[in-house]
Image 1 (cartoon, rainbow, N blue to C red):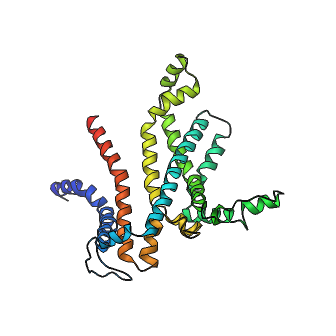
Image 2 (tube, helix red, strand yellow):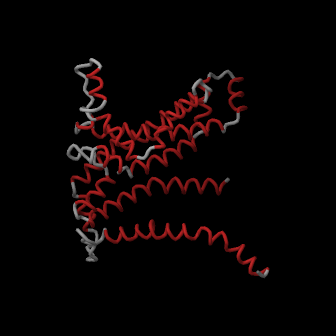
Image 3 (cartoon, rainbow, N blue to C red):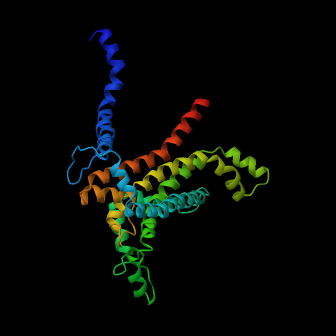
Length: 295
């Protein structure tokens, strides 16, 4: 191989190496996004038909009570599945940062849900939350005759059954992020605060937590879109029921697109969901890029 050919290969080899992944991303993410966006402007029902109807599907979507019900469910679900893992993960990280005994055992137990898919986790928790087989039956068997734990079959409480599983599954991930953040802080910062007479709770509250602000934002940025896209957990645990009490927007998209032969309406709801995720992620990404430019 000549020197010029070798130079040319060295120049283009990185681009050639990543090109298959780039092509797959372009086709299966951006390509399909454009396709779904196009379907949302058609009157497609059981199959895709390219009869353009403008914004009709979006008008129909925002006139649908079921869509608003899914948004109401999301308004109750989202703050809890983002806020509780942040709080619990932070507290557990602070606990493990004290080099407590059985640290490895605690960490393994909390991180264990990360090894399970939502399908497996949902199946386990459906069994636990079902009154005939799970926690309620165990409590009654242990002598607590009046014990009731039937959230999964109660319309007012079924959304919180989803919250329990989501928080259980994501707390370990947030905890690991906080532990990494805490252990990356220079010990001299903590020693300086202790010399100034600050107590440990005060050091964590006033010194370490503000330092961990990027970690908190990163964890929230990951949890928020994940909560908006919650689908498989709903399918396995409640199927959106009882009634529509645990339907979330991602499940609504699936239900309209694949089950009810309302592809145009399902595509419109998918695009609204995508725009919502973008509204969460884009300002943060732009803020980070701006900060890096200033650095």
